[in-house]
Image 1 (cartoon, helix red, strand yellow):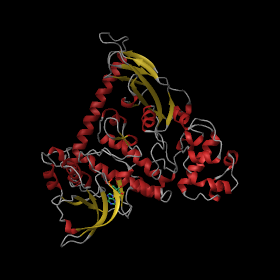
Image 2: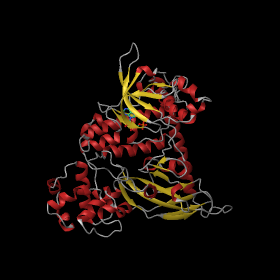
Image 3: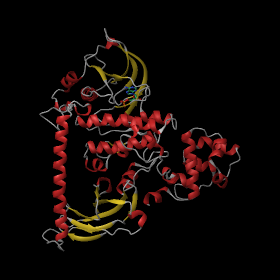
Image 4: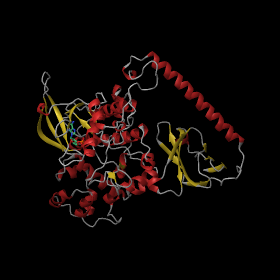
Length: 519
Ligand code: AMP
């Protein structure tokens, strides 16, 4: 990368394009990523730009500040091509005149801005026109003719009500507790147990429901936070959003009653059925989640905690978005899902700008949706495996992205389900990046001394005896094993089989995952 010009608030850069024909013929875009050099990594903001030419002028920078840049070529299908080293450039200090004058670049920038403006205006006018013509369509029925482009129905934050109890009354139906029968505890909610049960309202058919309860000893604030989920859920009506049946607020034990989802939380469900669904079924689940999320963003609701654990599945495999709790405070979070530093954020599911400066938007929900796509295609595998939250943030800031899970179709786009053949092309899969360093060698990088030490490192100690009985007692023997051999010693669960097989592949390769990340 080369510096063409710098001012106190901008840098103009260009970069040479590798003449390698294989990449070049397919390259159409460049991804430029930059950040301030001296930022605390945990709160550093990364900016990523997608460009069609090999130069850029970046504005809005701080004077006299060093920035780190990296550029990556992308093929027409989004596949990565060559990448630059990380390069450092500094803006000039305030009061300095531009240090070189490239009228061409400025001309191009102004021209580019004008073009962008024209494109935005054209798109805006076309969208206006389309909305006014197709208002009856199912996608567009949130728009009124006088308020095109503005959702007619917008989510109302219950906290804007002076008395949150009034919000509950407005958005949720009050149910008499005698109409509810609790049958069995099915989960632990943030505020108390969740039950499966029956709702039988006189004059209506009885229905299976989930009943969220508030544990005794709550404060008025906790009661209001608990019920605020109902105030939010009660405003939504969509096939892929959990439906609120009603609330109990007028009796001692407050309850939230929702439709019952037979298969529970999606992450658990997929882990329990590892390898049992086709790509077609998995993409069907994703499509449902996407439809629910689109509805929420049309309502101007930002979820902030979209993750497979917050999606519920019914017995027709329909997926519905749930968990609209406003309070994300978890006292008991053994998995470290939510970090505790400065608020509670589910790090692995959250967009970098939301982590860095709490900028939660529908766009950051889209990032989380990408992580959910990965979770679904990987049958509930934990995103970024056993990396710590800090390692995840660092890796993301260094441009690492989750690689395609095994058997993931290359083309995961809308309209896929209408052309199922497209799901048959499988994306490149690199087993080395599916298991982290401790799986391929000891945590200090040294080779494993025994089979049991290795099994322990990949959390598969339960198979130690199977290996011994089968006469596999040295790491050399392990390295000779094929998939069939692993099955023969009694490893049948697809998830366990995968974990062991990948780890052996990683051992053979001797390439640590971390160096693969760096590549
Ligand atoms: P939540 O407080 O919403 O995270 O719920 C805790 C757990 O209860 C979930 O992970 C599910 O296992 C279960 N659960 C919650 N709502 C439902 C529902 N509508 N149908 C079935 N299970 C549910």
